[in-house]
Length: 416
View 1 (cartoon, rainbow, N blue to C red):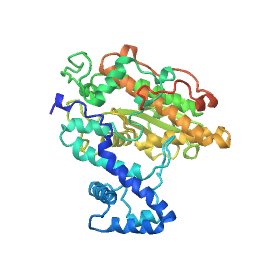
View 2 (cartoon, rainbow, N blue to C red):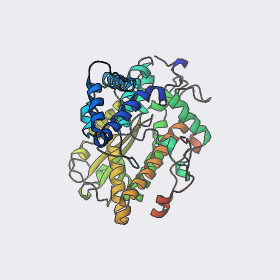
View 3 (cartoon, rainbow, N blue to C red):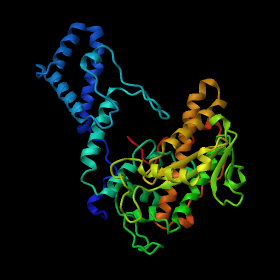
View 4 (tube, rainbow, N blue to C red):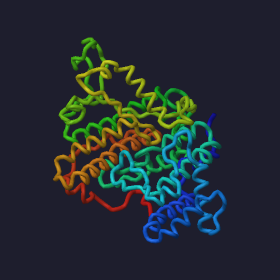
């Protein structure tokens, strides 16, 4: 079913202070209880007894904390539990929030408010934002979530490879807000009439745009590997790799082969870069894409495994599918690779600077690949392809410049 104007402005839903205030209040009481337990133990014991009592507390403040706790319990996602609210007695005894298993660059230690607010926001998206939307709009909203999914909008425009022209930035924002795109052609090269939101052009395999927008992405990946210290070759034929079971007449090839990296026991990395849409060219979302994030990525990973079974099973190389979705979501493989590349690159820095260096390199590379991908997508959606960025050539900045910051202290969308 085609989307309507009623689906406008659903791709971005800023956090609402009124919605997250119960989570913040519960977190404030949870943070205060251990201090009271240490300084004023009788008062802490009284507060815990009141809070644990199934009857409403006598104090208005404690009663509000009970209500906030009950709300968090009711909105916990039982189908995919990531965090359960601890009991008041456990918090008073010193229980602290869980540590993130894999912290992102620059990420600080999370407190109770982070987990409580995430519970409310997840519930709001699942039960308020998604249900009234058409299935294709829901699929695209899920495609816009996940680690680094909005990095193209928050990357510092410090160099040509992280800058966006006004028209393309306009297109990216309109796609996220589910607004009509600027004027463009009416029909696709395949003959289909185009929808006003760019869904057809983002997925049509007959228009030639998928291959055109893949070029900047592939070139940016090659530059990232080069900056990480690899020797990079492009468009390598499987027939030239001496793989068992591959005929010398086989014309299959992969875009990127990187050697010389201390990853995966030093094996060459053979990579396929892919950008996919959770919505098909006919406007219908892929099966389960309207309810489960990352379906388009999982599908393309299966396709590539079927296309290159010799690479998947080979002990002579490591095959990686570097997949992303048009909304900005990235695969777990891509996230892990950039983190590992940054960690390896940072070993050249002084021991005290290695963690900061790893964060800086990972941030830089996320900015480069995210902007290049969204830039190329936007260019092809509004027929700006003749001037499309094909990944700027250049060299990596010195570590001192990278750590200091290459440019203005503001992103293109500063958050105040």
